[in-house]
Length: 165
Image: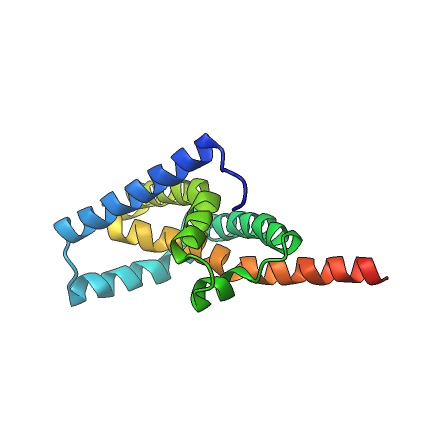
């Protein structure tokens, strides 16, 4: 990002990163990573969209899409290449690009962790910190990564169309 992010946004992103790191460490410490844990993880993930609180399977990706749209339009206005292309090709510093993504999705990640914690408490009656992280990143972070570039291309196309027509 060219301008500095607000302090609250930076703080939120840092809290999200620390929360994810702590949850991953807890997951490995409590459950390890065996074939049984892997099987339970995917079983639980497949069961969740049809259960209670399934609205989060729409809410989190929509919020990530809004953040991706905002940043994609900004990329287009600055003439930057699509985000995922820059991230994968190595043009630009990858850590800066990931930092942008975390800054934009930090609040969504924290919301996702909280919603999954509530889900686990009410439905599973247990706590699987690794699953919290996997679900949250799949619903909040991955859509952002996948949508920011297409939104940037769409905004570039729209700007070009307005200028020529």
